[in-house]
Figure (cartoon, rainbow, N blue to C red):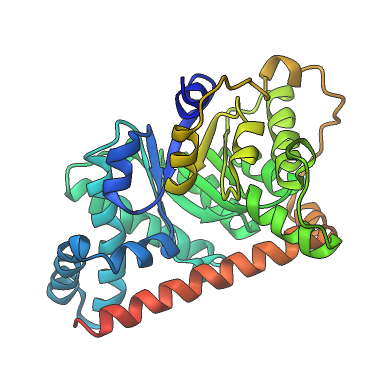
Length: 316
């Protein structure tokens, strides 16, 4: 048995791509996209009709907001195509420039859900992706009360994870590889053994905390740099994996051991932490890696959204 099949016995696999052919190839349960992935996919000839249809939609409905509506529709168009080939849910990301804007985030989420419902897709199959800022937490809390499910992204710390779980978020996406990137640079190391990888340790800690204290929020490890990181988190609720690493797993033979377990988490020596706005901001501030990677992630997603807007301007 190859390691991709072995991993599926312990964990729900999610494809981290906006490319529909890759999703068809690996048959994951769910899929997730972000502005960087959509930008990459938009350069592929095969997906041009999804862009062109969104441009026409934006022109016909948008008026002064034609460009903004076109971008929103592009994300929904890719989501719709992805949902044709997976049995589960697709994550659709709110503009990173709304990361500190609760009302703006709610408005964008409602626009996404309305467009999906217009296409006959129920909200149960959509996860609205929000940055794990305090404002993102507040937006998620409100959306979850409305029955709109959220995937909290750009997550780098336990404080963020606790706040998202307390808000009732459906899913969190802690960024394993980006945590590793920061530590390699900060500590001047080329690599870490898989079981000492700082990103792996961070997700393991969050997993144990959630399972010990009975949170329903699911954990989806994301942003992997290598296959060893993926295998070290076998047993996590979900893992979102790039096509390159999915291929490596498929090409590797061997058993996959379950590394994370809810039963073992019950025995972890952890204390419950209360998180309100003040303590959230302080916990993130005290973690240099989380502070820097959250800010950098927001900037980079925003940058790719701006590039997508420029691409659209050329078509309008």
